[in-house]
Amino acid sequence: MTKQINVERWSVVSSKPFNEILMVIDAAIGHPDLPTLRKAIVAAQTYSEMESAVRGAVGSTNLMQFMRFDLGEIIAKGRESDSPRILRLLVGNPLIMRQMAELVPDAGSYAPVTILIDERADGVHLSYDRMASLLAPYKNPEALKVANDLDLKVEALLAGAAS
Image (cartoon, rainbow, N blue to C red; front, side, top):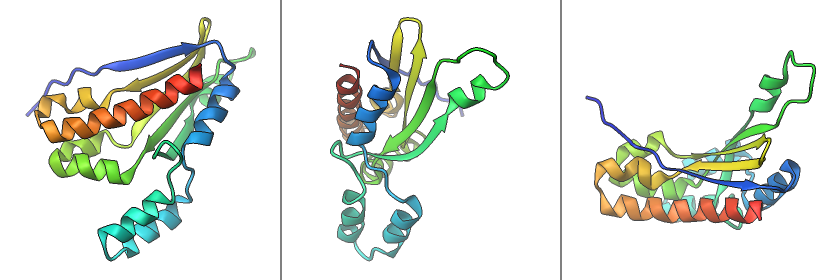
């Protein structure tokens, strides 16, 4: 079976330097030691214990970084001139993912979410594919509410970093 999914990409362009934008984002999201967090989640006997472990790992946005891919390092190889920076962050919250995936299991394909930060001639672009658009075809109002809340968190983070 094939399902058609139309994705909404939210984007903002900033005149701020790449590193300044990244500092704002880094300050707002958690950077847990993932093996330690995983052990705490696995060891949790109750939802409350798991929730406590996750809450200790997130930043002020209620989000954490799972992985960071420096795509610019790859693009720069073999070039003689400076290459624009491009960074992909996988960001999310296991508790939010759980809420969505319990209702729509396919949500697990989209969480954690991707934030793309890249330099272009017109400025630094911060982009995000809206979770609500990814879950819309599943027609689950409860999952869409959680996805919309997540979208608001991520978009506020990026808008704040860009301004």
